[in-house]
Image (cartoon, rainbow, N blue to C red; front, side, top):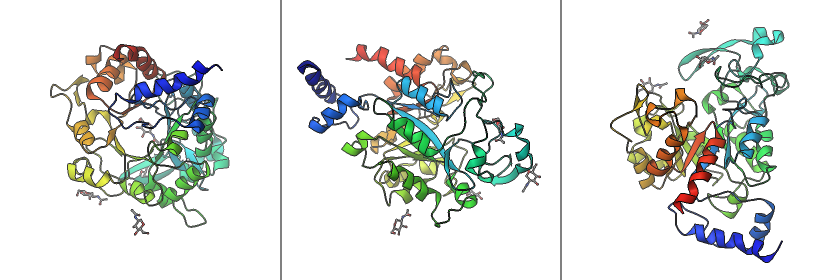
Length: 376
Ligand SMILES: *[C@@H]1O[C@H](CO)[C@@H](O)[C@H](O)[C@H]1NC(C)=O
Ligand SMILES: *[C@@H]1O[C@H](CO)[C@@H](O)[C@H](O)[C@H]1NC(C)=O
Ligand SMILES: *[C@@H]1O[C@H](CO)[C@@H](O)[C@H](O)[C@H]1NC(C)=O
Ligand SMILES: *[C@@H]1O[C@H](CO)[C@@H](O)[C@H](O)[C@H]1NC(C)=O
């Protein structure tokens, strides 16, 4: 490596560092970080985060090793996962509380009598619930694509994975890749899964992160080495873990008809200025459903334009990471002329969000790479 190779990253960092809104790495890197930089390319912090929602699940079955590795190859800044627990308390990556829609559980005769009905947030749901299976049993299942209009050729090829296996994908990536795990359905999990040491779901979640060395506040040296955002729809899970970690947290915000599962608060309560004043002591940002920012009617963006949610969140120093961006025509408002880049352009350059949950990390990465020269 010649001296130019050593000096260039310094110049790049200091040039880019001066001209952006979001809090950035302000100090010049010291010797330790330089060594690090040469081993693993650091997390980009100059543009909105590319958050690979359930991995590259637009291409591969969601929350599998393959989907996460693909997202890393495609340039994701963060890989995202929902964390649930098995009957015997193993933390696993799974979005639904039931196995029906994303695994082949229905084909396993030995589990035919395992179907149950549970009340989940006021709804009576029937299916094969993850909390009725041990991890040994869950390993027998194979994952399948959730949506019929996506590539079905990988169905049956991959297994479910643990929270720890998910973390390993990020830690073994050739560049620094962050994780974005969700404390999913904590009320239900704490009701139905018991750990022998009397600890609860949130404790087990934090023990796992600690085991793999995740620590530090947003943009701290430790955080930049192993970046992470912890997300949840349940405010009490976030305020609870805030008691023993300063890792950055994000409060997810669902559609306006859904109340919080733990505090039974309405959308209007948790997006009020007074609530932002309270929650900003615990979280660095919010993760709203994107229609709460840009409402649409009959798949056309509403004439009223964007709500004031982003402006008010930013005024409270909160980042905004909306979900979920998807390339397929049935998820794109007609206004975007079937072009997902037009959608990214609006959200990144006009609405100015700080991160985007996408099913197609590769498309968002290409958009950001191909449009970044124009701006500089
Ligand atoms: C929930 O649905 C199942 C299946 O339809 C039914 O057998 C059960 O009685 C229902 N439970 C409640 C509490 O409504
Ligand atoms: C499977 O997905 C369908 C469509 O989204 C949904 O209506 C159904 O409730 C899901 N089944 C289970 C058991 O979660
Ligand atoms: C944080 O810890 C304090 C002291 O143990 C406790 O009183 C408080 O309830 C905890 N906060 C949450 C949100 O659990
Ligand atoms: C949540 O709040 C709503 C509105 O006040 C109320 O109607 C509902 O019964 C509450 N749900 C629970 C589970 O307490």
